[in-house]
Length: 404
Image (cartoon, rainbow, N blue to C red; front, side, top):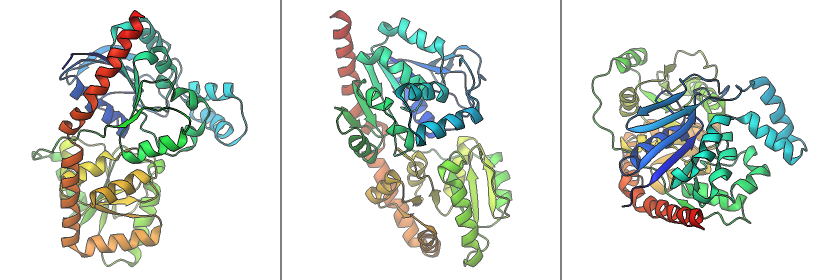
């Protein structure tokens, strides 16, 4: 295998960053670094709402990956940005208005873009993740002859903006995390030769978790009650408010009044105050694994996903998933794995909850089928069969363009 020089451009990067796309980026960067020279180009931001500089500027090494952080020109004003979003996503506007929106969407870093343009020929391949942010929109055209886009896209209002018609024409390849993501992009960009491939993701089989004091603290809050778990950013846009509302409503007439809902992740919304809702917060990996191992099943309520890594982790631990059926990716994962159920309204949520809680044998069977699905399709070995030929192809094309 040819050792390549790879730059990976992403909006934020670090162990403290809580986001599915960013986690996928970090694990893929670490995997690629085993065989290639990988440098991550990112900002100093941790918070995706304001993009304010928090990490020190400069270079660090995280799990054998070189990470170069650049300052953001201006933090985002959430109130001002909300106003321009209303104008851009709902009302008539011009193409220049969309570019202005993207710059305010951020994170916009002149120093990162300057570095990328100045050093473009030092990289054989440049990966960009995700489509939605300024690091990709303004950075990818600078290196389009060697660019790969990992969009982590789903059906949401911004992707219908005209500026993305041009962006999706630029990269050598578009890499999707699920068949549903690719199918959506083909429909959305029907007149574009996307060169879109499904690469999925590599999921490490979980190790036996060590004794964990954080888990013991959470376990004490749960008491002896059975519980279901949500893992991810605790955000209204991730379906967490609807999940909490449905759960409280379910308790009112359920045969399981002691059932609890455990929320694992960083809360960016007001979590309802209820004795049966336990906020675990942002926790170490081992704590998360303990939570999944001991739950009855995992709930994935997001209406927007390009791939739900938490669902894959749950299946690897033999636990079924109850998913939001309005999300094509989650519904597709449940169908293809035969590892979970889905709902589109409260009545379906209630029926699925009753079914999974009442029949332990069925729940175990779904979890076992989900585990087999992940081990067959979402391993690093499977990804290593798909990705290297793409990287080599882009590197060869970039070398040709540099000498032309």
